[in-house]
Image (cartoon, rainbow over all chains, first blue to last red; front, top):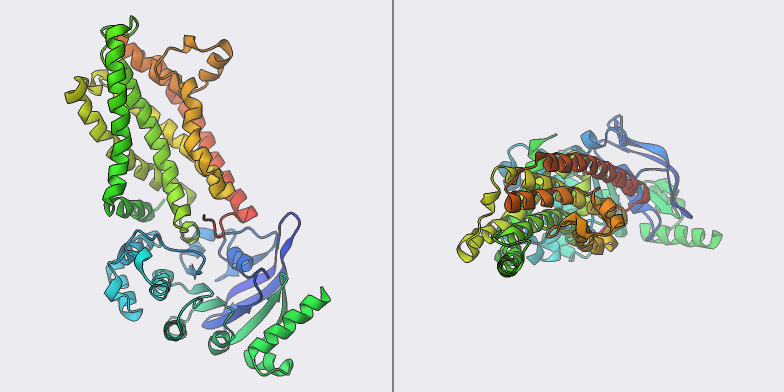
Length: 245
Length: 263
């Protein structure tokens, strides 16, 4: 299996805080890797370094054989990201937002691409509506369309189904599952939804306090820690880590 | 540089402006009010001042030029602030856009925004006050260009602060030009300033630009050395502005201010 993403000894230090401590992992082509951890454990910092938004203090991120620090612009063409904490301009219509991001990513045949994504993500009924007027489920699908506009080979999903109703959440999960296989994407999924992680991810990284404290397939982790599900594993690891601290 | 990406960022702001009538009216309203006010002040001084005697429109012309500078700088800052307010900053910086493309797109978009606001205001000066800014002749183009470069440069300084410090720097965006206005000698000759301030003012292109405007309108003399001095200073400040913008981007990447920047 070809490794699309290699993270080597990645660290980020702020003045008095070590946000990420020498973490290493890989993501294969056509793999969804789960990144689990409590709030503030370093997930977003890790993703930001992988996207070239944040300069690592040490270590490196290699994507398709190229170091992100030295090839940021060329690699960003092949990557994308969604997070509930960032939004698309609210005053622009859905279609206008997709046109803008299509242009920014140098997409050819933008209209065809928007049509394709509108059909797949069921955006047609509100494609000309202002993005700020949409429900959170609709906004989430639009953000996903924006994240797929450049057909990324590496996709970062930060809580992609946060605050969605069960039906929309299921639709988004099924879509991610399908498109990742179709396009052979490498996906890093940061989520607090353990069922979602178990369903989508082949491998999982458990993070706490800036470190990877365990890793493996969801089933192996459940077995190894003698728990019934991933949520119990998560709680056990985090409580142990808290007690150790 | 990719023209496609520059057009993309331009479209982001074009869509925003064209879809909102209140936004367009807001762009036009303030310059128009400003120019009408200065039109009446200008008319008064033309009648009652020895210095401005029979030089109809000197104050008004300078007011228009200053407003052009003000609008171009504010427009540049606004484009940047729009991204922060709409929490779109991260999306913009994870798109494969070079800093040079961002600057170019903002420079072009800021010009359109400035012209939307100022052209209607300029057009009303003729029927209302019988004054045409075109009286400045060919040098008018150089004066506008010089002011635009300086406006953009100030925009770059403020945007660098926004990049590095986030929305907390917003107030500086609004106050930066008010700080320079007294030293710019917009409505009066540099000799009015105390000696120390004269030395400081000579380091600003504004002094030469407005001195030139008055020289043409009051004395009917075109002094190209003023225009040259303004362009030389503009070149220096623009270089510093661009360098600072790149430096702030690099610092923002180190400090993490590009992540989740927003209100």
